[in-house]
Image (cartoon, rainbow, N blue to C red):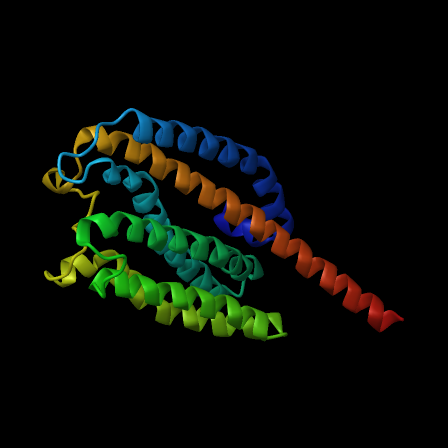
Length: 243
């Protein structure tokens, strides 16, 4: 079985109908367990107090905001190279999800940063690049809506996605590129010394798993919706020509 088989809209819809209940269920289970575990059964940090517990929303949403754009990049490249409509629609479907994840990350970051830094916002390299990424998300969505021809819209938004990837990379690695800035280093790392303490680390992983499953569930659902909307428009246009 080839992965490219699911570029066929019918096969994609069948697959999504089978796996969607699993993603919804896993996301609900992981989020309930991770958030309850993290907010109610972990101690306060000796420096940050109870404020540190916002990590269970901030870190997963920030990771998904960045990785959602990378998923859009892969889907856009598939569209450019192979002209599979499902990939273009998947990229379009992921953009609003990425916007929401970015907003959650920015909002929770401000709540977390205010008592730590004494300000709701700072023009820190990672914060600034994350804000620019948010604007790219909005521009991507607006470009899809502004162009009537779907293939032309897919082409132009794919180019925009390639450009915006620079800021997705900066958002992920800004702390490593620049040693200055208020934002802390990575909470998750291959280097165990840079990770948060295990008491916070374990429920954080569960929360991240929940956000990942939620992201896939939303993207699959929205992609299916985009396919059905395109089919409906094609049928209406065909009936209009026959009339």
